Amino acid sequence: KADNMDAKFVSRLRNLDVYPKTMQDYQIKTLTGATVSILGIITIFLLVLGELSIYLKVNTEHQLSVDASRGDKLPINFNVTFHRMPCSIISLDTMDISGEHHVDVTHEVYKQRLDESGKPVADAEREHEIHSNKSRVKSVLEGGSTE
Image 1 (spheres, rainbow, N blue to C red):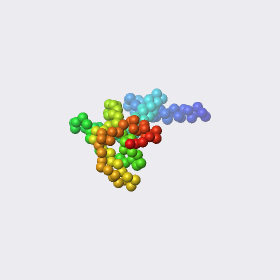
Image 2: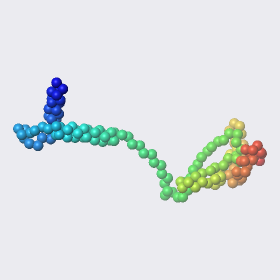
Image 3: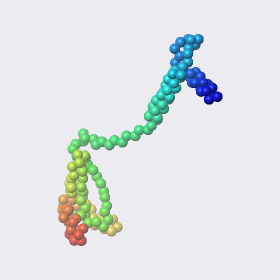
Image 4: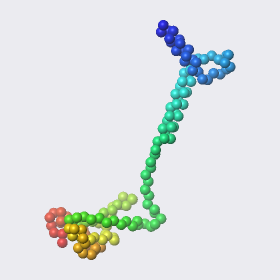
């Protein structure tokens, strides 16, 4: 009985041969032809499925570039408030695109002293007039005076 089922399976498999070479009267459907047909259909299905998944996939690219035509320096404006921190220990450190670090930048940096409610106590001072430096920061951190 198992041989009969195998023979029926092979007969049905031969009928799947989609590449007949001769006229219908002279065609011989073979197991090799059916195997090639099935492998071809599976390959086509997998390729179509793969291409469809690539087509439907959303590809997001994030890119940020600086307009170099405006000059060497890019103007940056910022306004930051630090409560209960003396202006003299606050400094600005930057890093450019090449990785060069600029420590304690003072060019066009203004500091405004505020009271506890956030209102200005005195006029804003340019950074170089305040004479901020790292030794003063160290002194404050060790419990010394800010003045």
